[in-house]
Image 1 (cartoon, rainbow over the protein chains, first blue to last red):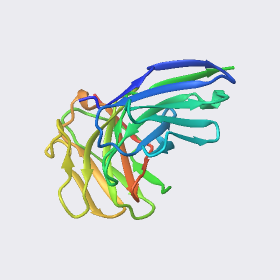
Image 2 (image 1 turned 180 degrees about the horizontal axis):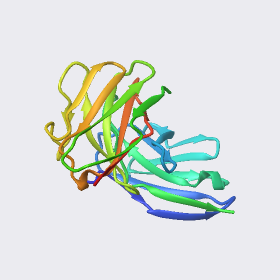
Image 3 (image 1 turned 90 degrees about the horizontal axis):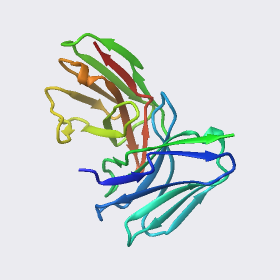
Image 4 (image 1 turned 180 degrees about the vertical axis):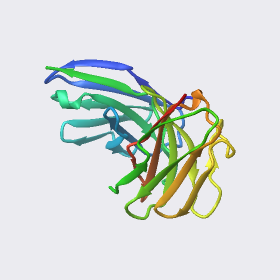
Length: 112
Length: 113
């Protein structure tokens, strides 16, 4: 059962542009929404995360927007750089010590 | 975040054999998990490795095929038993400390021939 839907599957952005990745979830028990960045041959690394009590969280060039009523959240990468080229996974979990459910992933390519 | 070391990083195995993957965390963690990731695909949780008790498996994964051990708070192993080419995948160890932070090892790339 796909509990976290992610789009687009792939994304090409010009250097300096804004990359936007969207996710939607079904389980209203989810209370923690992390984004992971994965480079080829590496494990996923936590990029930024948000809880549903806030609508936005910003860390540097990375921003999560969260819409609790729509059960949607998105990652915005401002001033995208070639070094941002990676696969991004949204995810969700609930209740603290719980397993993480991953989205299907978005392969981002930032071209010079 | 803590550092996870996984061994081996990759292996090529004959069908019908078994491979044990080791996961070592550099500090004590509360939870440890094992995931499978097909190349270019998302991560699928295999099981939660419970310290001192049997692992908790997700639907579609069974102990006979993927026995897991977790003898202490920093170490776990996953065995892929009686392997077939369909088991070719990347296997990732994950650990969680505190209520939210989950981090991953580099993964073990397994090819079954």
